[in-house]
Image 1 (cartoon, rainbow, N blue to C red):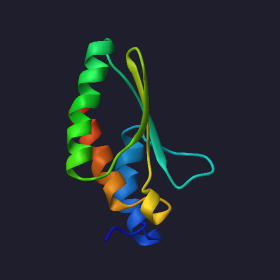
Image 2: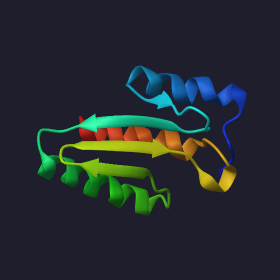
Image 3: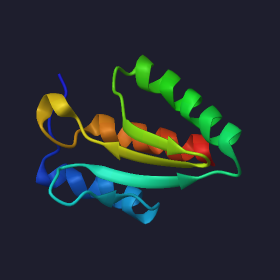
Length: 98
């Protein structure tokens, strides 16, 4: 069972993500990032690759795509906030965008 991140685990899991452009969402226990790609095909291809991992891990992002921009918000609804799954998916998203 996934648990909400404790105060002790937040720094080690989230600080590297903040350094990579993720930010806390105002008013929510969630993180967000905007990705820019060269064109729509690259953005949609990235979303497809992420979707495969999200389905495999049964952890799905809140996201939207407009042309070459993808806005992502991650939170774990089952625990009412951030969990290790959010950090794991964020790291995978960054790696796939690299």
